[in-house]
Image 1: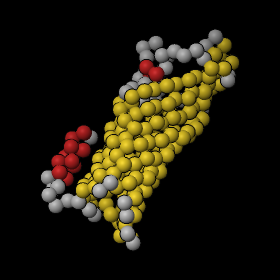
Image 2 (image 1 turned 135 degrees about the vertical axis):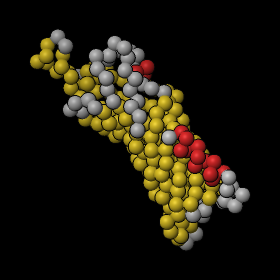
Image 3 (image 1 turned 90 degrees about the horizontal axis):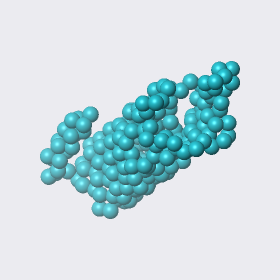
Image 4 (image 1 turned 90 degrees about the vertical axis):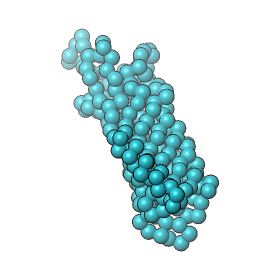
Length: 211
């Protein structure tokens, strides 16, 4: 995937002599939701945000690299048996919050010109660097003592974004979905089972093209 992204960048940069270039800033409100392989789990979406910048290279067909800081929270709830009494179960609630630096490399296409702007679609890979992880765990409504929960998650993952956007003058509005491709969980040596956590995000962003 890294090679594909590099080839796309090189091909567009090589044509930069005739391509249109825009630079902008953006902010977004997001709804993130974890998916997991834990049995009988309830997954809840939670609100986060993004803030960053983008470069758009090209006209009808264009490349749009971006970089932004994101906060992606999520919550999962499930039941687990008591190891001392298999007939008894505990209700477990996990609140997880990731702070990340995300770098999407999006390929876009202008679908339609409208008065003072256009409508476009975009899609591409996202490299996500996790800068901070916090996690709280409650059992039957009682918060458990903090342990090495954050160390149980990786510091890098891949995702894919796709969505639709509208440009009006210098304003850009995007509605996108980010599909988590990598397992975020890094199983500790003393953990009884392996798990899979993937983060999926809907977000609505507003940007301003500086030039």
